Length: 259
Image 1 (cartoon, rainbow, N blue to C red):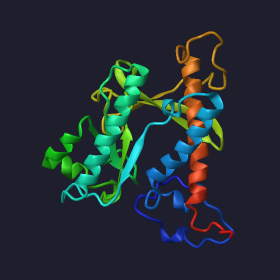
Image 2 (image 1 turned 30 degrees about the vertical axis):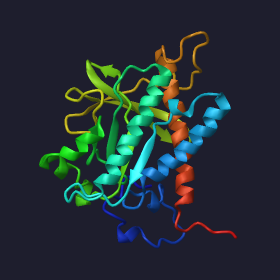
Image 3 (image 1 turned 180 degrees about the vertical axis):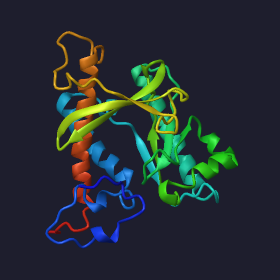
Image 4 (image 1 turned 90 degrees about the horizontal axis):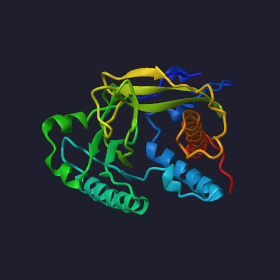
């Protein structure tokens, strides 16, 4: 069982193993995995789930787009990025108007691969991309283990409205197999509701998942109670896990191909 995101690539000792299985498999490592593949799979799962319940899939599925061959340092691929950011913000505005949401939409630009909260920026207007300073360009050029950012994903931003000790907080859910086994809040006192919280200065608080298996309370407004909210986190986590299984199945380099 691996406890390494493999951002720097595969250690030779793990390749060409015989009669052994790795969990997760090597092609789940961030040197080859792409977030856009995951969100394509999740989008399909959300659509099917939304149809089953008769709800708009957008309520559980942020919009996204993807751009390849982007270099913030050299200014390459910025036209693609600007076009996608502008289009995505327009789509979000229409959804906000449809649901009466009185907030300013934003998107988050992040690496299509990699983790560790690096190479992430918030954009409220596509025009912001034309005036990036050197510090921002440098931040958006290098990822964990010295990797160079080249492919980016543009994802609809979701305001982080939860608070723990007056600090902005976001839930993180732990799963083993298909079961929700716990979680925590990532909190950051120096970050705003539209910023990345996975940054230096973040701290963690256990998430009260004691009632995670409890069904939403009858007659209560959706999301109005603690157990209700935690239950919804668990539902979304399970949908994401299902999407991950589809994603890894499709991207498995050793999968058998049938005509």
